[in-house]
Length: 322
Image (cartoon, rainbow, N blue to C red):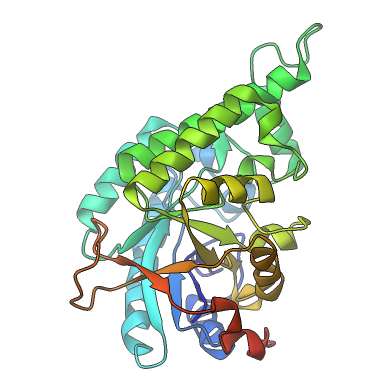
């Protein structure tokens, strides 16, 4: 029963395509039985908007309305297609400044009955996006004191950057305990061959974050989006995946689709990657059915997919055109 916990649509995200309903229909066609509908939470300062949002004349206020509209539509679709697919409704985090976390707390309090889970992701370091384009990534990297100055170690500079990313991630995990930890090593998007073991401070913080996620039962997503961005693997890379496994972490799957055309994209390649890692067990989120299993504080349960997950009929279907 392959599944995804992380998705976007052009209806509620300017860098995606299609409507949310088109995404759901694509997931049904692909044979998904559990599919998570998530959207980025709003950002609250004009200078934190992305260029395409500025060009569209959006404001922090309109982003908030867009997010509540997403919740309305996601729950409508959850009910309408309940006989064909289990849809879960969640959000993906943003952490640019501490104010974003305070506002996330407010959203979770106000919308507690409508937000079933969190995908805990970091997309900014030094208040600069690290996954929008290479120029912004480089600007974030260069924002550290001493960057580019004579005698400043490039390795030390990268260690600072990575450490800042993992510190922000830890703050997010500690405060909100997201059910899904999203693209854990996004910080090396433009450097997929980077090995964290070469950066001792960052490596220690990475291990700390994984251990903390394991301690409260988080699911670590294998995220197929890395494959369409030029990686040879999904997120996380092999070294991080092996660390998660060694520390007792539980894995799940996400396509991180940005429109119906991306639903299930590269899942077969991601399956082969997981088999190469000898991942024998996959988990997904489900609504409690009365069994006496653990339940996350927002109400969903982590559920193990029993049997040889890689032999499920889903994989025989392949990704079908939308």
